[in-house]
Image 1 (cartoon, rainbow, N blue to C red):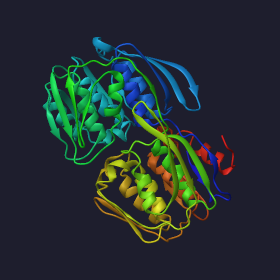
Image 2: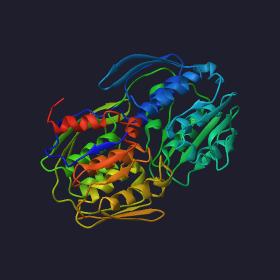
Image 3: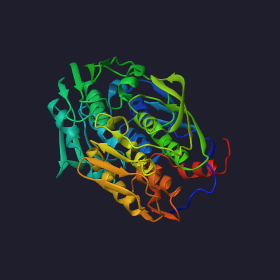
Image 4: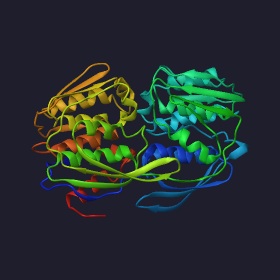
Length: 437
């Protein structure tokens, strides 16, 4: 689908509740499927990625019942396989475009005596899996992968042994896969990272009856241990919120409020960066939901933004927001520099190369090398034709650019937004109409 967008003729005004958090939704579905009993989940993101996790656990023997489809998300009842374990699937399990689904499932299946094949779409089949399969193999799991250690990938689970890991790169998906495998290993498995990554797994497992020993950069689980059913409410997704925040900062006169957003410290690095840049963003803390801090975000047009440097240590807390921050940086005074962002090259697309090329095509100034990105601010953007490459983060970032670029911006494969924020274009129209939902 080709999406056409022109500079917003009016400020963005109003309140929108962005969709449920994708990372939390995945884990809620997966953990409920592993648990004994029936879990009630609310606010689950209605998206292609989360649907992949739902279909995968059903193929493995869990029962997923749709109770309601509401503006805040899906309400589900999930009856897990519990102590019986997952069943051997009839055919390959299609994880679609979801890296979270395939990597966490590798950890979940590693400890059960079944054989399964996990596959995905063309984009997912290019993403590296060795970073997960190598440490899981140290615990005793066996894998068969395509050349280059990519999907489709077969897993033969069974008896596991505990282990201690020092990950070379901070990765919530790798860490989570290892902790989930550890649930089936007799003894303590410890996973340490060089810098903090998303900690949704560590926060949610206790709700399902699994103690997690957490230190600054390490998390440990002692197995074997079984999950018990739990009720989980999913907070709004900060990564989705980031795109509406960025749009409000750039479109003159805008004032946008986003309620009930997850304020998990490992997810809101983009807010800390925007504060350094002088953005008019106000955060009001709300209640804690299933171990996750939440609150409301208000973003207003900011005419005087200043460039900053994003260090490699900050990147794990804002990795999904780099394309959006790069677009915001085009309006800042000075050169904004992103360090240690090589991980962007192995996302749904080579996001590092793509966002750099797109900004230059729009008339901005961007330079990317293997691990860094520099954006020279002060270059007015001009509408052009862009291709999302089937990447939802790029599609939304380009739409934000189109709100302020002169002329018309065309975005090919815009349907990629369905992966995480299907209502994105509709919510933009709502805000342009100044309607308060």
